[in-house]
Length: 105
Image (cartoon, rainbow, N blue to C red; front, side, top):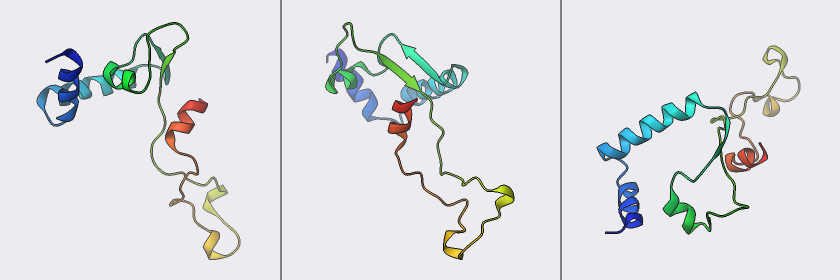
């Protein structure tokens, strides 16, 4: 079994002990680093090559941290005037997806 086939098989079983440990260590490591980090190579080279990545000049790989969860409307003390339909503060959804927010950063 080649290297890429082995990596693909490993990523298919996300509940395995090896991958769970690897993801837990990586999550801790990502939290210690800066929000935006330039990488020397992609984390998953097999997936990157499938998406068109080539390791040559002109390709830049960057990891960007994005805050998860819903959007909270900024209101002074949570006071909203007007009709009850427009008084939502907590259960609002952000218009753009997280990938577009990361690319903008």
